[in-house]
Length: 66
Image 1 (spheres, rainbow, N blue to C red):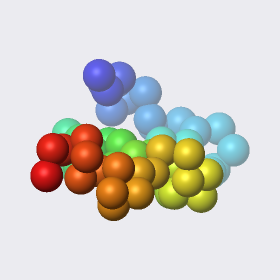
Image 2: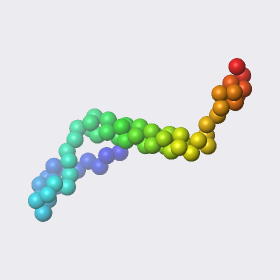
Image 3: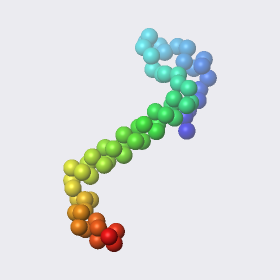
Image 4: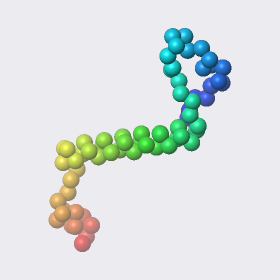
């Protein structure tokens, strides 16, 4: 869950550089979904590179019973 803080907490950043961003919750949630998807894609890409989890066509057909 997102940490929601009052806007007054963002008034003084100290060094003049932004440290926070204000987003609508819907946009934040969309970004989280994208990050989750990217993590899964990276995991899948690593699996393809290792080829350890791959089945041959023949083995797949046997496993599916076709």
